[in-house]
Image (cartoon, rainbow, N blue to C red; front, side, top):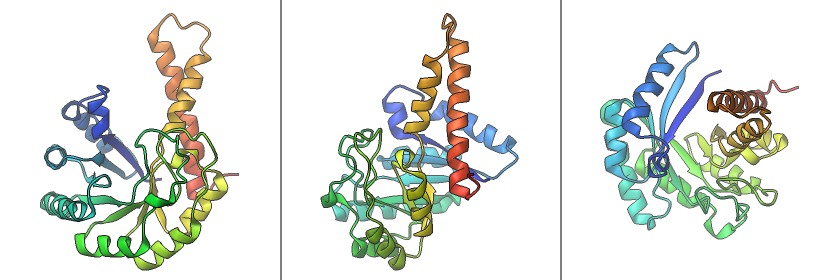
Length: 239
């Protein structure tokens, strides 16, 4: 199956890794892969950061202007599209908001920040983006309560836009809901928090945690198993 590997601007802000260092590794591994790999810069909130990512070779970028005023989100997304055009990269952008970027505390149920279908149509058509991230009930991070997705809203957005829809905060959603959103036009699912949680659980289960490398191997295997299960669901191969 084709895959997308991502570095987010916030990863550098958190001190996890620097884009200048991780990008060449991502591109090297993508080139060695036996399946198509998109190397994506996620949640870029700074146009200079996105420009640098494109220069490093990212094949896809996301400009996240969801916390900006609407007119500024449109204007900055226009610039991101123009920058990406120069390198042949694709652009994802967001209208509406998933709320707290790295926390599911809201459960994603604040309808006041859900994506307006009319605005989604206007945004996608006027900016020329390649993929649309929209809010319909998911949130980043771990969910403190079960997310309730607005399928009617998603269906209306899908009927009004001509680009693939992206679901952020996707890793805590039920298998049934995954199938529904895919049927309703979602073509990219951002999957991290529960994969990372699976890695943490696997690491905690290591009996002899004297050496970091043993913990790392266990965590990596735990995340791998979790994401393979998710990919089987997405592709319809889950039993």
